[in-house]
Amino acid sequence: MAFTAVWLTMVTALLAAAGGAPGGAGGPGAAAPARQGAGRSWPVAGQGPRGRPVVLRAFEAPATPWGPGHRGADLRAGPGAAVRAAAPGEVVFTGQVAGRGVLVLRIGPDLRITYEPVRAAVAVGAEVAAGQRVGVLEGALAHCPEACLHWGLLRSGPGGDVYLDPLSLLPRSIRRGGPSRLLPVFGVSR
Image (cartoon, rainbow, N blue to C red; front, side, top):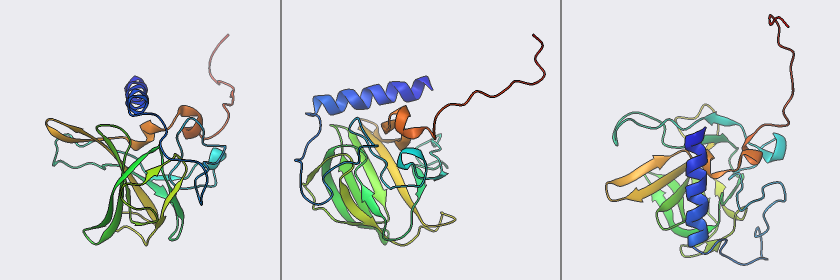
C-alpha cells in the first residue's frame, strides 16, 4: 500500500515537472469522461463502478530483468473497444512488435505507458489528454483467457527499464470497486 502511494506521488511530481496535462481540448475523443478525474483514466471502459474494467491478470513484478512475472495488467475488453490515454502525455511509438499493434505514451521524463494489441488512432508526436481516445483494441492476446488490453508502465533508468504496476497511475477513487460497506464481525466478544 505504501509502495503504491510513493509511486503515485512520484508520477504526479514527474507529470507536474513535465508541464501537466498536454494537448488541447476539443476534437474527437479529446474530452475525458467526468468519472475519471485528476488527469487519469482507465484505458478501456468497463461495466464496474466509475467505468472500472475487470482486471483479468494483475501486475507481477519479475525478480530479475529476464525472470518470470507479468509486466503489466490485463484488462477485459473486446476487439474494437476504444483505448484511451491513462494519463496525459506524448505518443512516442505506434507500430507492430512481434506481430501485435503497440502504442507507447511518454508521460514524464522517464515514464512510459504501453498498450497492446492496439491499432493507433493518433500519430507519433501527438500530445494527448487523459481519457482521450488513442486507439482501438485489436484481436486477442494468447495469454488472456478472453479478449483483453495488456497495459504496461515502464521507468527508464541508468540500469535499463524497470516495469511498474500500471494500476499505480490511477487514484484510489478510480481503482476501487465501489463504496465501502460495514459488515458484522462474528465471533468477537464485546
